[in-house]
Length: 542
Image (tube, rainbow, N blue to C red; front, side, top):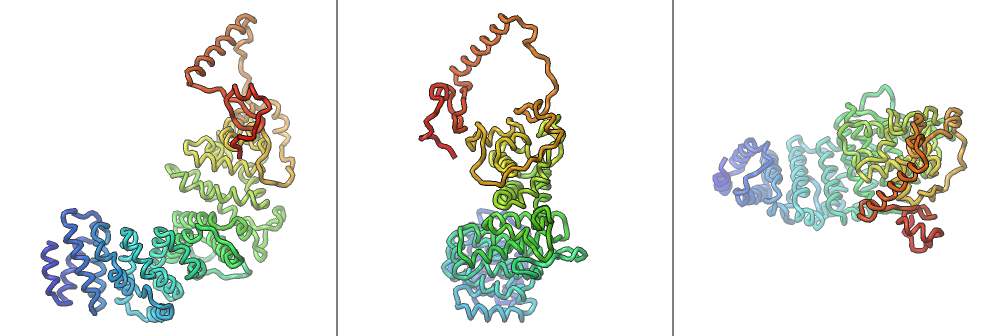
């Protein structure tokens, strides 16, 4: 349909004709996401014309049609200037029942009125929220105007009526809050301090996930016979988790925040125990839970295992390890996922398990029993096989630096940051990168204090230990000695030849021989030979 024709008719059309005209445009462009650049000016004028219609008192059916048109147009970030104004954002905020910039009492009143909306009026609210999501996402100018008209205030007022939400109203309210908090760092602090958004989102999650408290920070165990979480509830919960993730990125403190974070940890534990309608959705829910747990203070992670009503395992101090087992299973799924992005999909759960193990003894002991059980068969290289240990050791030499460092750090913490223990499970070759980074090539321990080591070596390992190659971490088959039948003169000749080859490569800067300082850091070989005691005052050690 010709845009010039639409614009000329809109100028004189009555409400009924406007609705018919825009309905036809909407039908033709409902699946359009790529627009003709030559018509940018015309589409921008259409945005302005639609806003003008919305500014008048028209029926809900006409409002809905206009908003559908605006939603289609808002897919093109180049034509949003008429919408990214105070007038445009206030019109959309009013249609979405957010009452942006008004007093809190007015917001609460609007929330109560929303429960009485007729179905057609509710569709207007949903369309307005969809438009706001598109506009805020695509227009930095609209993001600034959103701050100026206190759109965040209206969103938080809407959160207070979350129990009365219909699904799409709740979904797009939460999505808009997520977008605004993701795109505007300054809004996060306002949302937290002034509008108490963390508490409000926690209450939304609590209601959506049907949490029933049996202790201060303990939710009742989900009924194993219960139906999976409905898809709509799951969608809203994911949006709330994403918004909470943004709001908890910055540092916080105080007793109130600590209480709120522990409540969130308890709700996330409950979420980890739930099942959704598909495995894919369950994994997505667990992924968002892991991301949010990474933002919370590590001291809050004891909520995951301290559930007195449900009880725990005596061998782990009475702590309940069900949630930790879910996280281990999730980690293994992410490792096994073919073609996945390890940096985004795997490193968050590895980081969470690492910090949990570093600060909570029972978590470390449980995970080590699953991931690094006592060694028995040491005839196979540690990176070969299908066990979790084998998979993690393979990741220690991954091409992505972030992945290899995270996997190595995880195993190092499970070994109580003891170099000797780590080498026992991985071999020196696989662990070299971590040891260089931590300045531990000469052995020793990390900085974290752990309990005394217990002797977990099996008889099989003890008997094979003298024959293990420390570089590869396994017992190698005996190899023939290549110099066994050489004369002393031949040996000396080959040794000199090798020295000459190294010298040539070194002079050409192909290789650079390195040595280890007493503090465990690497340095050029000539430095370590000339200064064996090493003046470490200027070293860049960790």
